[in-house]
Image (cartoon, rainbow, N blue to C red; front, side):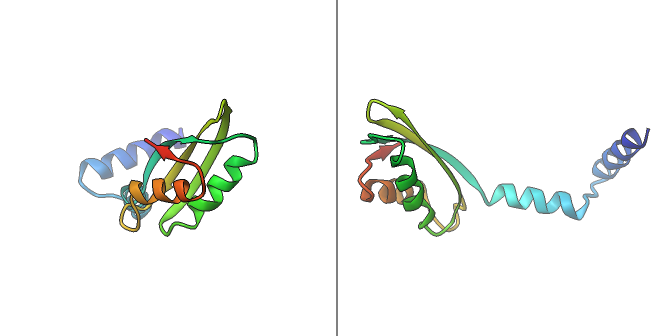
Length: 104
């Protein structure tokens, strides 16, 4: 019962154009973040993703990184970043400079 009342209250507020401060913060946070997945070459073992993640975390504006070795010299890196501080080209450059050519 309480859950449905709180939902109805939120819907009423949003219909009136009123938004709770927490909701505004969440929208702003999403707007300042972009996520891409790079295809990464030259990976040869399970330690390679660690090197890729380390290189990407040094780029200003990178918020979160995950990477995985898929075998046969290939892998990927998923990066969430602030587009106001960096861009995809800088991410590709960081991974490439670490010895792992990459692309979208």
